[in-house]
Length: 193
Image (cartoon, rainbow, N blue to C red; front, side, top):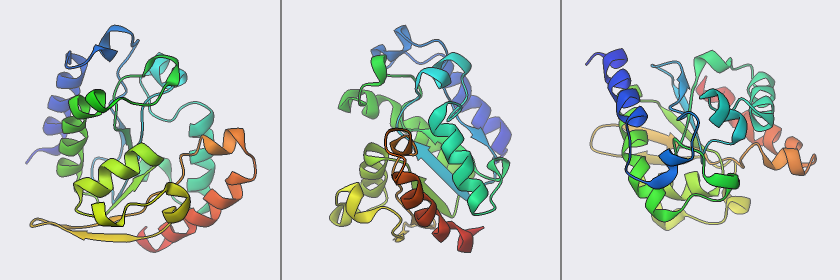
């Protein structure tokens, strides 16, 4: 499989997507960026205003915090792949709606399938719930405050995948104390570099 070609196909599909109404209010879809053979994939919830303006994931305040967290565990942003469940920004940064998630997740599923990471890190509650369910861990879903930074193993027919849910980096923009919690949680990634 030609990874570049496959990801390019997904990019074209996302640019032309009309499956939900979010395409009407977006500036740019935020497809994802990073290493196409990354061991670690981070999955956020949906683009914010900075991301919508540029088309790049995690380029605003939450992105600066994510960069800081990666630096703290000596992982370069270029080594990982970063994307979101939703590829278009929900107006006013509201929570993703069920129909929007259902319309958009096939793109994320294909991205994960093509990149074949060893570790998938949901950032925030929506990403965590969707990905844990997707990887057969539904019975272990709890509030993000209970399972942030914990390691979950999932075996599918095709691969073993590790899921490590984290708080969304944006929490540290509202509550500075959360940055230390995130830094501590991110330490677990050192053994997967």
